[in-house]
Length: 219
Image (cartoon, rainbow, N blue to C red; front, top):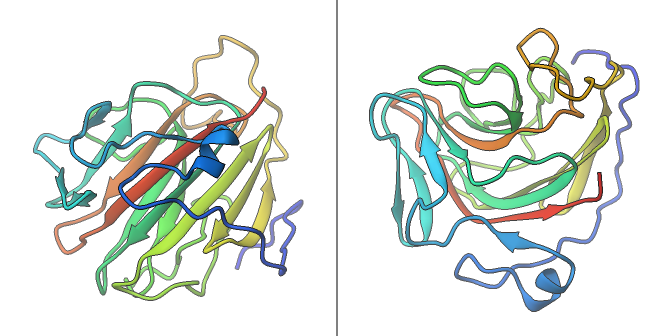
């Protein structure tokens, strides 16, 4: 595992607000400012960046298919925010959830930060990894099992959680970008604004996503 300055590993579990079924937050969550960004029926508000259709909706779930593709929630970009969603991956599958990404056509996102989804894919970086920032080498879940993936993204930090337990808090030591700066792969920062993105990694991977909730935090 890479040694990351400013990363705090937290061992105590935290409260997970349980959503109701049907891709709608509970009344408790709604009162706390959570909203759903997936209606459980369509991909309204979402757009894939690959040449072919890489995602479809089945039984209230977004399912990935085919080769490399990325599904952007393009209705709104986010600064400081929280997300949580339920995720499932097939044996040997690979996927991810990107935060703070800019739209890029038909390529891997380069300007955001990928939170890996991987329990048994040969890639050694497992669920909880933030690519190019922090390596997490033991998966906190198993294949074919729904787990809750969540993060709190505030200023220059990302707190990553699985099933309500905080895995770590990662702090980006680099300076924030001045307002109006064009973001690229070299100058990206946790503090930038950007889209939330779901990944379809390859044709042997079948990721599934549901109960996708966002809560914006004061900037």
